[in-house]
Amino acid sequence: MKSGLTRNDMLAAITNRIHVEAMASLPPNVRKRIRALRTLQKEFVDIEAKFYSEVHALECKYEKLYKPLFEKRAQIVNGGYEPTDEESVNPWRDETEEEELARAVQNAAIVEGTEEKKPEEKPQEPPMDPNVKGIPDFWYTIFKNVSMLCEMMQEHDEPILKCLQDIKVQMHEDPIGFTLEFHFSPNDYFTNTILTKEYSMKCKPDEDSPLEFEGPEIYSCKGCEINWKKGKNVTVKTIKKKQKHKSRGSVRTVTKSVQADSFFNFFSPPTMPDDPNSTLASDIQALLTADFEIGHYIRERVVSRAVLLYTGEGLDDDDDDDYEEEEDSTDFRWSDSGTEEVSDVED
Image 1 (tube, rainbow, N blue to C red):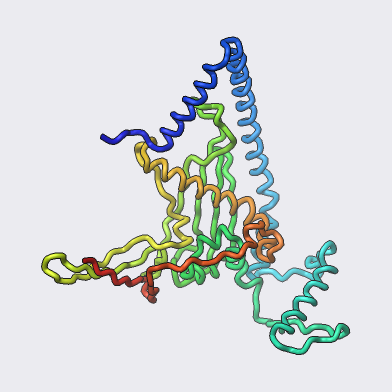
Image 2 (cartoon, rainbow, N blue to C red):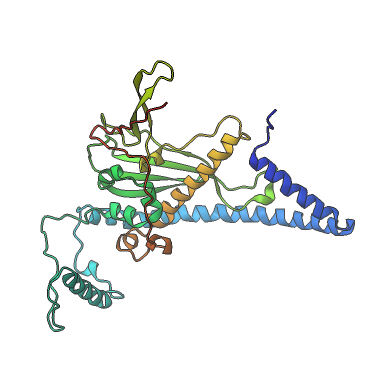
């Protein structure tokens, strides 16, 4: 007979037993004082919850101040507005950047096999294309630069993400939370112009275990339906397998659709099962926690510091690391219809 306890339940039971044994080893008067400290800790947690609630209210207030700056950024990125010379001056950066650019251009020329230019010669800059609008592949480049996003992105996602025009954040005051909006230009993959991901959070201690409170935490997230065009759904792949009958020796081809790795699975988060104490619920909670970390990072870092992630100035240390790709033992072929064919003969 299988136990109804999950791995987390067993770990919690073991931890609780250790705490109880530690308390049991203390004199009664010391245990009394520790219980008093727990009461003080509960009062601290109640105040801390109010602090986080006010912080969120402050974030909502300042979002309104950020909004016009982000709207202007989107206009520049997408070619709707051409900044003036005055708007393009960075007095804290311009002088050193010009020197860095000159060295980079000169180094590029040397690598390409051209003769090294004399110090007095001014390096040639790349030719200016008057037809270029805005900053091409702005958000796509950010996805490539940020390791967390790059790991989620697959090769078949890339042409879609090149159509990403903007990422916006909408803050919610009551109940607290936020929505990420991904704005796309018309493309060959789906008819949506905006894809959304909504996060709902709670900012008060749990009644049964108030001392475990560590700040706002997600309790649900909701994606959106993507209206894929025919044959363009990159989140699904069709696998064809050849199966050999064990006794008759006949071979049949089985076709089935399975989930494919894709950044766009981000918009289809898992849902919690009816039994919150099941092993499945524990696994899904772990997935939701990782999902929230991604959403929080996009809100806190990607949207607010987009230009620095584009240039590389604002990348974290792990974003600069070199990763080696592991070779997959299975050979897949991606076709125009979005299917992968696998030959797998079962004995």
